[in-house]
Image 1 (cartoon, rainbow, N blue to C red):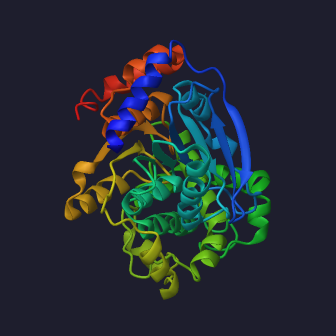
Image 2 (image 1 turned 30 degrees about the vertical axis):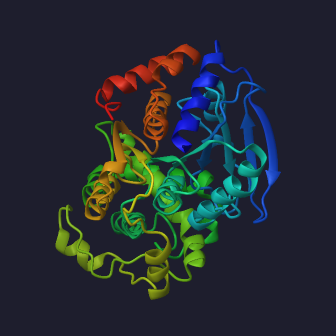
Length: 405
């Protein structure tokens, strides 16, 4: 019956839409946890009765609580405006905490739906989408909250192994320190305040200069860590700065949040340098706190036990959250017999969450198709601006089998 009512409501609204909805009316509010939310609705009479809810990515711990506006766009196009033009409401929670906020994202986004959107708007379907840290929030929700969300879309999230993601960031820092000692004060697990304070003004340029001055060491750094770069040499420094930013800004907050230091490389063997024996003798070693490891295992790791359909997007050359998370998650879904509930869309591009608007729209078309059995493609081509239509057609051309569900 839920499926039938959803289809009838969508068909009824679509029949009345000759043009795109023209407005995005913003309402803000507070949640009981201390989070705040943004709610964007199309004009009265244009809403199709369905909601898109967004789980945002990582926000630096020192920033004020608020929905990160810089994350509400894809390829230069506004996510709220795009979904509103198609007749969908759009909402996002800030979460009650910045930094490592996956648990807060999980609970605050659920609270937004259950205690604000449902009583206020009674949506017939709720589509959850999320990127980066929000991609993990989305995937955990797809595994645990089938009563809250209809389908899900997860982009560039650490969904294969969160402990593996922690170790990836820490490994890059210790290997960087081996090849470029003294460039960044402190260590992989101890970040001096001066590095955080002067990151933009001092340390970004120091790191870039060190890499440029010793290209052989820079090449070995990439070989050992297997961090994503392209044939353009400038991506080496771009990748290094992106990963090291997370080590600098996320380490202390993650340690506090998890109740202990979570990075572990005490028995890791590194290879890919010109002298692996020396590298493994000299690289700094750390053992994670058992409390932190237990917290990660209990609360931050996906199971693969999907309860609702999900689409996962990931750039194949993502330097921050590597693409290897996708095949790891594939194994989890195969083991648990839920692989049929997941569609994975690899995006052949360099960068973290470097999706076009067309990639996002294609993922959403699949989500709606899985939920109500209706293909939104014609509506997108008819109602959205020319730039987004071109991007959508290009994404569909790269994935010709995507809609054969």
